[in-house]
Image 1 (spheres, rainbow, N blue to C red):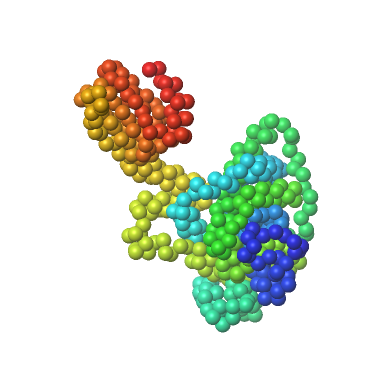
Image 2: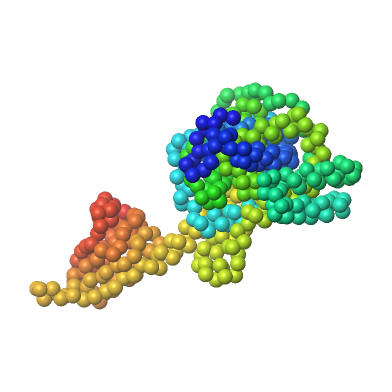
Length: 502
């Protein structure tokens, strides 16, 4: 692994530092091994969802992890085959076959690169904290929910094994913090089942592991407009879902590590990684939040080395030691993922004291994000709905902060004028009520609208001001608008009189 890979923040350990420090190197290596072990059943499961051979998901996880370790903008983040991507592209495999699926992955990667170049990553700043909290909590619920299938209709011994695995993960760090507790749990439970000849579900039951390396693959599809019409909607969906999950995961890791990442580079890296994955016959993917939490939070990894090694170990394990890996009991991996879900959930966000202090609108946004995400099993849809709810509630709240005060002022010439002082932000939600705030019949012939404490944000406000002015003019009264700041004046001058037939 080259030691010159850049990192996102000088405060983070670098790959060079990890290679020179036995302690850091041990952390990165062991973290990569734990992640690789956890990736195997996940990749197989996602392959089943997509309707492809398990090796398609496993090879995708290898190529995504290795590629993003060089190309990504967030060190220590894990990218691999994911359930969200599998759900999006599954219909292509079902209706058109494997070659069309790979063509979809390639086009999806290309779209991600284009979106990165046009600056889609900058949209992350419009995602409020309440949506982020809902995203994290929903993720934790989905991770736990995914483990339920491995705890139903299984031998009774699975349950105490899961309990023991959880106990090891919780208790072992008090004895030794050098070796990741999840790795100890996996090794101990595997040894128990092998030595005791215990018959419980294992990784081998999830699907056949590959016995060869991935090879170059070009999809055999006609390069026609019809092909593009078939794959484009799925490729676009894959690109958007993958970028949203990856960028949200990067933001989460930023918060955990108190560092910054290059979101534009991450978006571009995801696209290129998907292109590489497609050309090796993989099903595509994006950032994996559960495995990233294992790597960053549970194992303490901080550099690109752990991501790179996760991909390399994955390939070595499934190709070179597939027979051994197949013996790992699913109970051990379920225990690991349960603790990941517990550690991922933001328990502080649901404490009664927090809920009492938090504005109801913030709580509503968080709950909406969680409910929609869990209901649809799609983190991207949940985040989009959460943002829309946040925008709606924000617009409603800001609209109610707009006030209009009326005073009668006598000028030096003895004429009386009605002065309306408008305070607050004027946009579509607030300006719609502005028209009703004036006393058209009772006002004198001169009206002054003072916008010194306001700002015009959109055409709806200009249209409302035009309607007010027109209403007064039909009664033979004159209106002056004063106090506009430069931006508001420019917008008003450009649009006034152009928005209606008056």
